[in-house]
Image 1: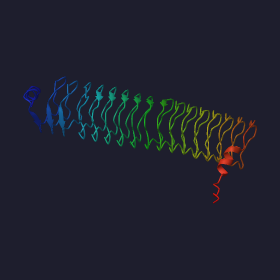
Image 2: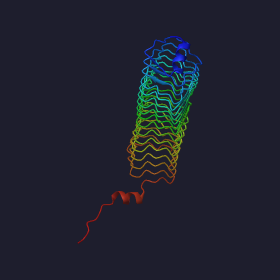
Image 3: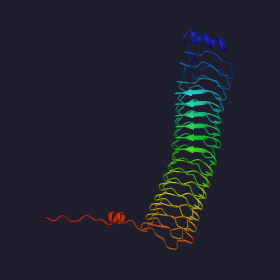
Image 4: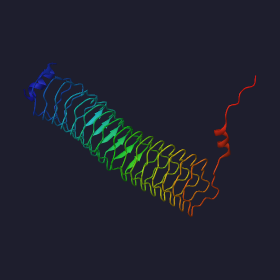
Amino acid sequence: MNRDEILDLIRRNKTVLGADLSGIDLAGADLTGGRFEKVNFQGADLSGVNIRKTGLRKCDFAGARLDGTDLSNVDLRKMNFAGASFQKVRLDRTLFQGADLRKADFSDAHLGWSLMQNAQLDGAVFTGAVFEKMIMSHASMNGADLSGADLTKVVFLDTKLEGARFQGAKLFKVLLSDCKLAGQDFHGMSIQQVNFAGSDLSNADFSGANLRMCHFMNADLSGANLEGADAQDAMFLGAKFLKTRLAGANLYRAYFGEGDLSQADFSGANLENAAFTRAKCRAARFVNGKCSYADFSHADLTGADFSGARLYMALLHRSVVDGTVWDRADRTLIRLENKEMAEAEDWTPQETKR
């Protein structure tokens, strides 16, 4: 079956069923209103085709070229696109759930308002792509390349991202919750208002990154590098920071409550107005740290080192300070107990007299 025969079937409102169109050249063709079922498009050239209002069911597009094609409002669920080329395509309300997109190339594509849940995207390429309001939940993206991509309001809930590359990408209001990102390289990147809750970020590199207002609740940052990062107003509730490096970081107003910061290094970091309520800070280093107005209420500071730190008006209400080092620390007006907090914590209801 050739190009003219296919276009004739479309004009006569006929369904193309079970045809082998592998390697066919349909570049720029108008397939509007066509119906294709169980068709083999492997290696076909579909670059720039008009595919709107086209019905596609159980077709195979492995290795096909769809470069520059507008795939808006097209249903491509559970189809095979392994190794296909989608360079500079446009997705808008496109359905790719459960599709096989392994090693597909979406370089410089515009991906918006579309669904890729449970899709196979291992080794897929998204370099320079623009993502907006995409749903990638539960997809497998191991080894995917998102270098230089612009990601805005994208959902990666429980997405497999082992070995994925993000270097040079821009992330804004992205959900990366419960993802495996151990050892990931995020250094120097712009990562603002991103939610990493529950993710494995152990040994990840965030050095020099912009992490303002990011959310790391219950994330594992053990062994990670946040040196020189700007994490102002970041949320680290319950996060793990075992032997994490945060020297010189801006952690102004950051929240570390109930986290495990054992042996973490905050040397020279800006921790003004930061909160460490009930955090475990055993043997942590705060050497030369700026800790004015920081809240260490109920924190375990056993063996912590505050040498040369500025602790003006810091609150250490009922914190554990066994073996804590204060050499040359500025403890001007430090608050060892908050009477109102103590009264509230010690309050017990009285029996009502009858």
